[in-house]
Length: 257
Image (cartoon, rainbow, N blue to C red; front, side, top):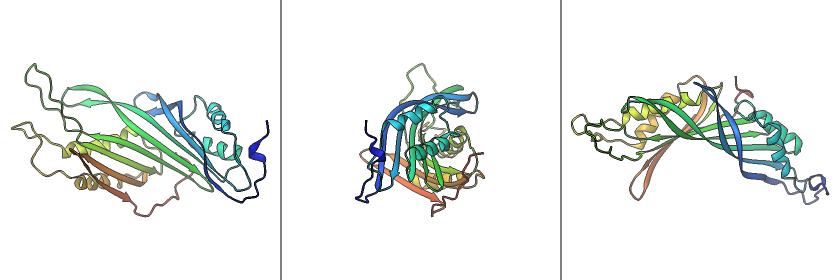
């Protein structure tokens, strides 16, 4: 078989992105309580090719994943990007993964631990410098009212969601980010002690976004964050976004300590 990648291309047209997407693959996520948590992620992998290459063998992306099988985690992210860039002789390598993360936490209403699922994303890029962002979607839900009879509990649904995207100076637990977000959101969604219904005090996406920004931007391990709070209303949604610092600063350490 002819190696398409090695063929010269005289049209001098750079390929912005070429790669594979929606690859389902097992990964390991660090877990504060259990050391590790095994889950399945969906991968997108792509590169920027210089103009003198016609293309690349897509199977090489899968070969790289297989090479790191059993060792795909936050700490190996940069190594995977480096191998992708080197093997495909690319100007830049990129990888995106989406995965569910499960966190057992104390339920105030049920007086016991319950397992909650959070949707997470990671995006890494490696050109001359490297960049890594972590995104977590944290549901914003009113606490369940205290059950006073044997009937079925009332279905409350979600008030909305807080999407937190961050860059960090040093390693930070996923559980810690979730806890910081829920400390703010649970405080803002209080129930009236008389009617067990949501308080009549105004609750806005702007208020929650500002309070989340105040909490996250003071954490010593976070160097940049983007916060989007969305309220799911009937027929439409409202949202507020805050980015700190406002101008992206990509000069992060090249390794996570």
